[in-house]
Image (tube, rainbow, N blue to C red; front, side, top):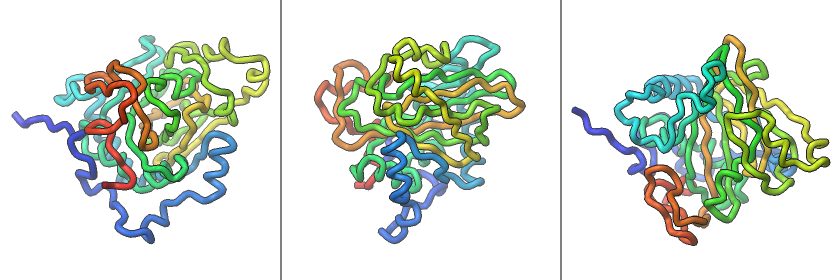
Length: 293
């Protein structure tokens, strides 16, 4: 029997899916414009960033088809695995964490130069560390919602709040198949209570002020496959159900600026050794991804 490798042991690319730049000149093609960075800080997000070419999308789709099966031999490496987080067969949301440990493509996408350069810029040019990944898959015809929420409301076990999220589609994402929606400028509202992620779409409303409810005007983020959107850790976002004929598969990469520390003595991710409160987030499971050592 072939031994199962934990790819978290490898801090750098293990395949040829991406080519890592070797000079400052080669990095320039991946830099966001000043206007894109300004949009992020003003509205809490920046979208339409091309992160994957068609052959790379196909590799990741094939890997997804393998690891989504509960009997995959590396299944134990997931931090979380929910074949349907909503538990309603008519409203399916596949959601998992930890697949970067399992396949070369999902491992190497963390070091995708287009991703790490944008993350570096949006984190105010600080060094970038990996936090964790996610998969969100909504099948055609009966895909479920992701309720309105802020990412950092689930991450207060790490401080300071210098985190960033990148959502990338493996299918075209439209309003018909449940694309991401943002509430522009909601990242300036402060930290809100966390609702159930696959529960009531509007559960967050109970925690909003009258003024916030008046400003609650969703903007649909429709994206072609291979394109990504970055958002602030306090950005209110969510996605509606998928009753279309087209699936909506996507992966998420979450990162934070180097120097972030643990805010708990408890386990940070399932199966990952704890980092004592006040100690720096680093090591095998939280690699520095930009710049490389």
